[in-house]
Length: 132
Image 1: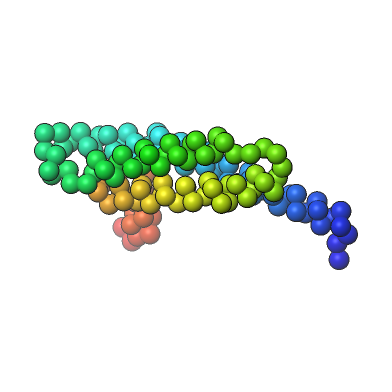
Image 2 (image 1 turned 90 degrees about the vertical axis):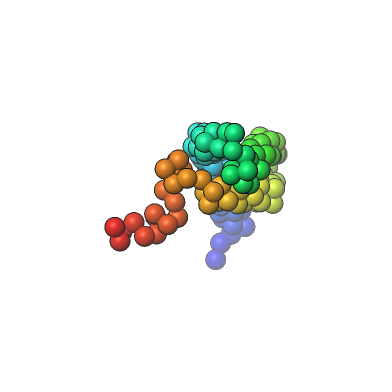
């Protein structure tokens, strides 16, 4: 059985771990998007210059990545620093859903993009690569 002080200390450690993990996840997601996905989107879209009808929904999907990325960066940079519970709640309720939206947009781009341009291993490659 924990004392009140021990319970509060454990709670503080849990908040700190959650905040640290979320910050690392957001920063990694932003970096991967900016240095991997967006350049690949530009490269893929360039192949359809002059053939916009063949590009399909690429432009719209790729632009949605930029929009979701900007919303995530703005939201993350606005996170409160008043207290651990407030910061953790903001990350969970505000930032995490924006991460999910960016992830959905990037997943949609993966389905459109030529395999050789995609900057990271696809789900298929990760799941089935041991069979090759």
